[in-house]
Image (cartoon, rainbow, N blue to C red; front, side, top):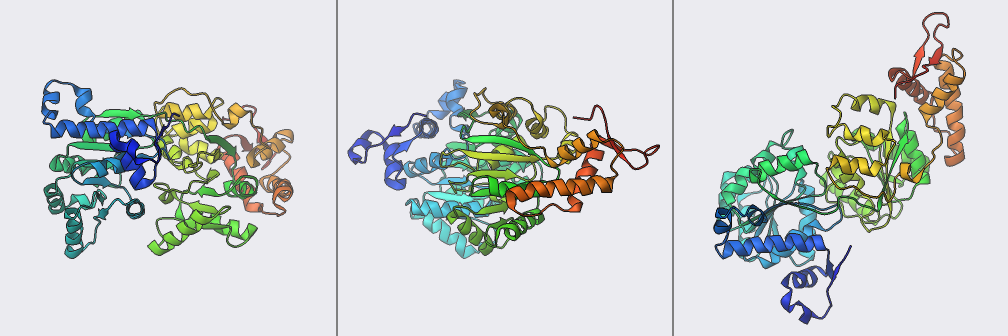
Length: 506
């Protein structure tokens, strides 16, 4: 991608205040074209408002020009969305309000802004009147950024106080949460439209890395009454290479990947308990300090300690729930493993995008079981929820399946296991099915479990030097094969013996 190179000699900034602000305050010597476009739209919309032209543009029904002040920006993870509202904040003659989904993300962003000489204040729940008053004093003193979450903005008194300071720009970060969470467990997101109308700033920008057409439409409806200017860069992160590995017992395959794949590594787990269990298994197999876990149930000090450890680690493994997803700035993550599939394609792309933020190649590996296939089969074909099953079970390019789910562009695949012609050894359930198919009515459940345990431990010893496969793991494999309809238990002549169907379910 083309870059705008800025010379260190500040004389070059005389006709480019945007570049000057980026370099002087953040040391950024170049801005990508999409960043420049977004910032240009913000500044142009603000100048139109200040010149009194906004009303005239609206009356003339020049919707594109009017909506540039009401834009939804889709930039891939690691593309520098924050700069798109931080630079304008330095140039506008009033404060900018930035709405974040997570308190931890607000704290982290405030720290980075202060490091970049951008003064900011944070409003959160539980603050005293004195703390709030101190924040407003800082705003009067020239603080440029106001950080808040949707919940704190439900306070009508606070919104009125913010209205009085003359906010010039509202930025909503991780805007897909408006749709993803607003309609489920965070109704405060649905009230953001009313907050925006009350504050009535000249410019509003919603930022996200991933959003399918239905999500975009919902975000536009809630925040902008259905009328918004869409700025979309290429959705494809070419340095992320996508892989799917089959496994009925996914935790054991994750242990193997901890040895065979590059680190630092994130293993995303579906629950807090699974993240703790995965970390324990890794530390037991490979030594204490190999892995740590991270989830929303940790105390703030515990989270900060884990974040610091992982940020500094060159070969650590973090076992995390989606609580670690947003705002992570560790740039050298080489492998992102999903023990459980994400709920939607958007969520998966967001989480997979934690890898390779330094531009280097990173692997995103989804572990997929027969049970996953059954669980996701209940979703309507073509729905956002069904996209992950399409991704996992496609016989064509995995990258394109994800891009199609976002309604994005056609792309030449830069790396996925199908386009690469990747060949994997038989998975645990494929091996069990093969044994049963070769020897119909020969094994009972206990007998195939014993045979499978022997073969799986033989394989793991070659890679790990350890016997990690247990009898219960084999039982789980057989149960999934039966449940999925790939094998059956004979209840008649060959009582309790297993056989494989000639045409097993896909």
